[in-house]
Length: 217
Ligand code: FES
View (cartoon, rainbow, N blue to C red):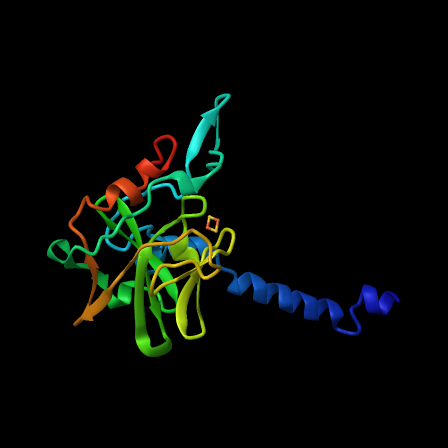
């Protein structure tokens, strides 16, 4: 026993020391690595095309403390985006370069005060765009959803309660009354462009602030 424990006759202690030293030598703080690397910091920008920051959830102050606001009881009573297909008012707007957008995931761009989610699917190199606000609880989260397809139709599942929407028509894939507004996307050279109505048209129904009970940023 003395030989094994004190004299390390089986080499167990020295093996553990070696492993510990390896951990010490190779340890890195992942956050510090990102903070010190401008390229990796870009992954954490809220908007591809803006340095602005907006809250994805509404914070209210209660008894001198901040907390997320209660969800609306019936979000469906809120205004929805009426038809935006007014050809005269639609134009292609460049929102970023192809390499700004992750593959098989989403990113957010800002258009006026409106947040739009843009997705690039590796399968067939397809691009999709829709409002970033999930109509279920009016949370600005769809870009963080799970991209997939159902019977060949591209869909996005909201990360909060997994309601799914077609990225081709915007309709609920669970046949619910909720729907989202989708936009055409094209790539010209390296530019990613969305076909959008004039700036301001979407703001009453999709901008961050009007969709919060209080000021959301
Ligand atoms: S907020 Fe509930 S499904 Fe999106």
